[in-house]
Image (cartoon, rainbow, N blue to C red; front, side, top):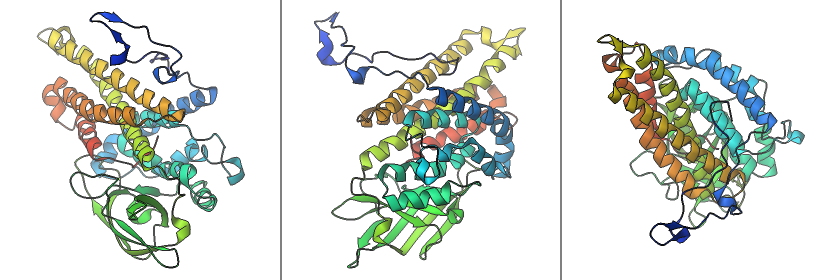
Length: 398
């Protein structure tokens, strides 16, 4: 990891079957692969991370507030992200990519670092990569070739996942959007989606729909397909991110648009939750980075307010909660990297990201007092963005 974070190779809390008696504990079997994870970055990961962190500092952090005020991404920002080369990483060399393979750990690190610059811009930059990752995991050879030709380009090409639906209690296993198979093997897709990035500008959309007996399946469709319409959505947070409600009215998709039969919805949802939690880690780190010097420099009654225990303890709690969340996200990513079932850790990471993301955002506002409520400082923007975590599902993938 970066110098500020140690390399973790440690055990998780003991399970009930590892407890002997009231106070006696059995030593952990260090050969249990599920209890250990080593996050020492490869040389390539470390180099990539340094580039991404520099990009977040120089191109995103300073532009975040003006972008929020304008409710639009900075001009030229998306095309600058192409130089990071993230879209090329999972694509095989034969298809014009780098051939680095799928790496949930790399995706989590990049998502965290970009979100530290700004969550809205991070989602916009990484949305096409989510489509690429999903197709590389579950796409046919033809779909992989199509995605590589369209998205592995010299300029930024918008693309997005279309999983979420309007309404309360969204469940990816029980979608209202339907895909009815026709006699010739093609599908007719009907339904509605929410929070679709880029909307009418998206060249490719990965639409998820209920197929009946086969359950939820993914379909790779062109953004300009007949029957697809969009309506702009505005939210309290993520203001620069172009989000749209999408309506699908008898959208025709050939049989070749469907992902492979081995498509794993549970793993897809888990990878989405890990990525969302990584967004929380990066944004919460930005909050902590801002409030620490503020409380040390803000003087009240002749001394820095950090000298007061109530303030110092609140900052310490923020740092502790953030580090615990980061560790949970990294462990989930490490399980996914090794092909293990990461469902439990992914859901725990996402649950804690929603919980502590809102708490750290709220505490950041509180520590600034009245200034935290004004738009003079960015903490209120981070607070609004962190509130969106509970509504995000499947926009990005680890």
